[in-house]
Image (tube, rainbow, N blue to C red; front, side):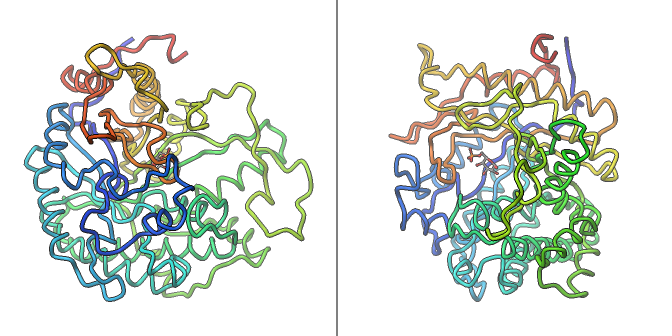
Length: 471
Ligand code: BGP
């Protein structure tokens, strides 16, 4: 069977500054740099973010590779800890401005539209030391940083993102101990989440003011959506899944698109004395902010049931007070990452955006598959034969295409990622790139999936899909 995407469809890849650039010439540490200096053993093979994919030095060549693959779009992020020389005053590092201006200009010259994101988990350590997102001073400094970025690069960049996956630092830093500072404190996490939303709203409002006469400038937020499937139709399981959705998806989705916190979530948090500190001026700022488009990172859904045992109220409260994860027996997983592969959920997300979120224009801003030891798939020409990745992409594109046919307003698909990149904790264990990176010499080589994508684009965005793959 054949599917086809519109001629102006965006094809590209996404990456982040901290995971690709390396920390060359950076004047400040993020929590990730600091965490690595403190606890190297927390990182796969003791590899930290200092060199990453060496894009700081090789971006010009990398952009040529992107162009050779006919990709028309891209996303990366500015590192706050690079752009700003002095985190507390916001003083700009002119060398960093030169670097980003050249990087973004080179992309533009090749006809590649870049979405520039402002925050990808990389909180400056100085701000984490005063409470990170739990402190409103961070919100103020972020708004100043965002305004500087819009003014410094707004002549080159048309598309912006305030945050990548804002819920993830809440989970990682305040609930599940994935990332430094590994605090377990749900109430603090909620304050951090609320302040993140406020910071987003402030940045969006500043953006719309600066560019009020230029409709080509657009801003989004990038959310990782993990729709919750209840185990079955029992009301208690449906209710548990609904709560999981409220806490992890709708908290950000509803606020950023509709300007309002879901009332059921507010009631739930109030019942446990978990509401953050807020005032009416802040709520008005949030209400006023609107995004021009939405970025959706999709990797996996969640599978939920009601609690099998009563939550022990003597324990620290966690979101799991209201639900439990459920192991769906039919679950297909990517064993390298442990994440479920369920392409049809992308269709569910697309229809939900169409029906419940004003059919806002949106892009799949990340989707991809991390695989360990990809070297075993090298052919004689030293090229990685990642057919599993091609199949993974095709399956997702099939469901996306169906949703677009049914009216969902998705205008593009970005793969995570362009080149194998450093990951939080996992470092270089799982490779996601369509271009491989040799860690010994930082050499790049396009994988089979990269050439496959190029072929799709050259073939007028038409894709042949094996029916067995999507039944
Ligand atoms: C997303 C993040 C990326 C990236 C990707 C893969 O959640 O936005 O930064 O890391 O997931 O995840 P991981 O690197 O943990 O395998």
